[in-house]
Length: 399
Image (cartoon, rainbow, N blue to C red; front, side, top):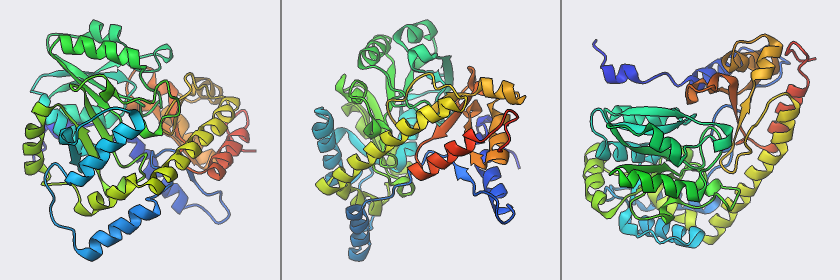
């Protein structure tokens, strides 16, 4: 069977390979072996709060399970619009919001609407690997621009200008970012967007972790800049509906009918049950619960950061959002005679029963030195993980 070149270009998602190996080790472990702790996957341990669960059950019971408009329930678009107003004091008209089958569908729709064959899109290195593959699926090419800790691992206006070429179509940013948990300063994002717009390009911002910002200096939506910014968001992270596959896209007015047409043909609509349930995400009690959980994520970050540093990892930038710690492991690799963080991940899996995400998925610029720790697990698990790291001796073996 002939496989398309498009499919061949999509690299393996190495985090999933690590996850499969960790699960296999856990399942084959002898009695009395320490259980595996999974800090490799970016999925909150929280699930849908009570009102959201009740709304889903009610939708099924009442039979409100038919197709919705391709752009989503009008009521849900209005609720999302109200969230932007209440949370960020930014007016985002509901007509510009398209509800999608997860942020993945939102990214695919945006890329298919805007990227032609051969177009180049600038992205920071490191960045979330799936985002660059959406560009590739639209026959474009993701250009990874090396970033530094001094830049918070984000693109700067100067670097965008330096790497802009004849084929460049725009930028795809993430704020806060996976894997670093860092955001772009508002002034820098304005400078980037001003330059990109001046070149006739597109500024696309992945904001799926925006609700999990921990610093007011960064926790603002890019949509505050102007109505030409395109924003991708999701109910997975802040709203804790990962498997419900529900997200949204905010686009300029002129792009709404284009995206609607693509959505009609590719997806018909997002899950109607998930949409009816998501209406309850914006109830007062639900939002209060989400804010409590956001504080819990910050507490986890603050508890784990000094422990990681004491264990020999260097976290060069304190994350201001999401639930990740992007840690340099070069010194530990050298101490334990390991070539890179890829081998380190399997070493920790074997010797500390700890699964982490090696940096190779997230780019090419020094990512072999880094490991991504997810703090989406509860404090007891995180503390146990740190205790195991402290117990590793000079050869990286638990004592």
